[in-house]
Image (cartoon, rainbow, N blue to C red; front, top):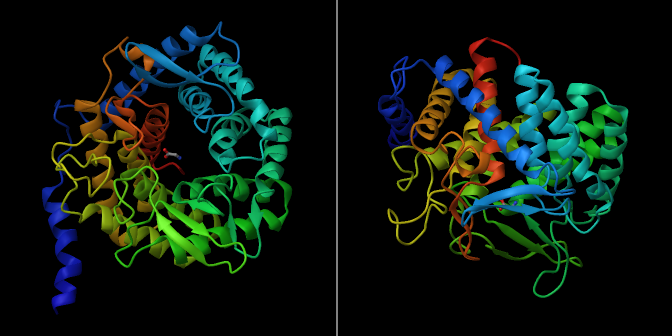
Length: 401
Ligand code: GLY
């Protein structure tokens, strides 16, 4: 009895505390909020694209100290701005958006040859993957295929995981929870090429990660460092979180998104169960703020005086919209949670029109322990914010996500 109450109570409480009304704090319907969000995103993103147009090879990362901080193709976030532009182009068909999407996508191309990182999924799927889906450009397909081959060089069948970072120092074979997102590229490649090798590798990686990255409460470690001889974890630690034993907020978001996506791609119930458990961890956590935008780490020591991470919130919201389509009994709950996140981001976390040089959301945290990108706009928060808005839009219209 006690365990049933423990299970049901948080769900009931979540539903009671959620804003289930048809309008948000600005007295507008969710449909109006989405339209406003997408229109604002279009003008902001065009502003950012124009700023960078003449700077060959340059892509945006964040906005700090009064200027856009930029990167080249080889940074893990390089694919997100092209992805923002492609998503907006899909939404309204604007030719200018397409031109900039193509321009920014081209800037990421050299990443296809990189074999020193696992981040090729983020880099190539968000840019070339979206571009290929929307335009059918065969060159984009060639780029993705080459990038997939580069990613596979990091797969070790004995360990059953793709290596995230290079070995060296105290890393023998480090795998981070973020790596789950790179699997989307492999599932996609498997479908495109009819080659199940990619599919099998992705499923294996997701299973090994499920076994070794999660604690009993379904929170996740950030990094698992494997022994290449025994195949066992040497240590489980953090890199961007507060402590080895803490729950770094974006790590929990990557985990939720990753297993939801793995269920979509495989239909394997074990992945769906994992995603459901991760959702419960996040939404029953006593340190999740009332507005559902997490602090940068669920165990950060100075909560409530700690920076938030809007990027974790956007990734969680986008994942929840998808998860809501797979779990009829919790559909309403997951949608309400995601709606509430979007409402709060829209009302309190958005950059002003023409502000922050075209970024969309304020208050993300890249890496607090490294004193890097604290409480600033970050391009991947914008990417998943848009994805969530567009998913919400499709769900409202009963379209497939
Ligand atoms: N993938 C690195 C991060 O989430 O900051």
